[in-house]
Image 1 (cartoon, rainbow, N blue to C red):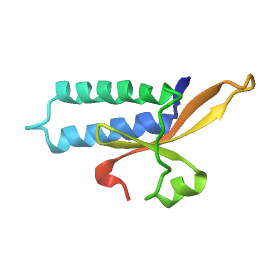
Image 2 (image 1 turned 180 degrees about the horizontal axis):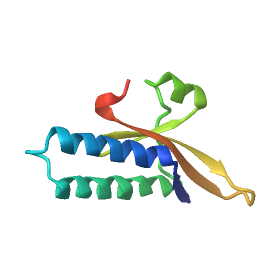
Image 3 (image 1 turned 30 degrees about the horizontal axis):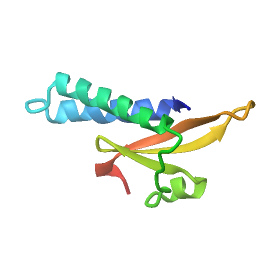
Image 4 (image 1 turned 135 degrees about the vertical axis):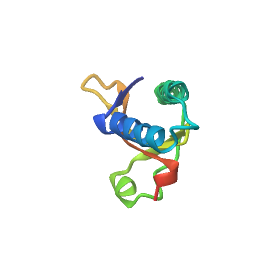
Length: 104
């Protein structure tokens, strides 16, 4: 199964780490951020496993109302859904992301 990421996902990850690098400039290195981003994107590939099951979004009302599932990886919570293309093949679309410290 293919995994597609909405632009909001990339923006959420980049914005979080841009702010973190600015705020924690003396304790957080660019190398650490790059490694964390690599782990996040590698972790998102787990969604391509058709047997992986994750819970329905619970805390964010807008995600819950849209029927999103949530996936947690490296401190981020991702909102996604499984769809089928015109040939009936399933794919995953990741709609949004938020860091767990900002998840309400």
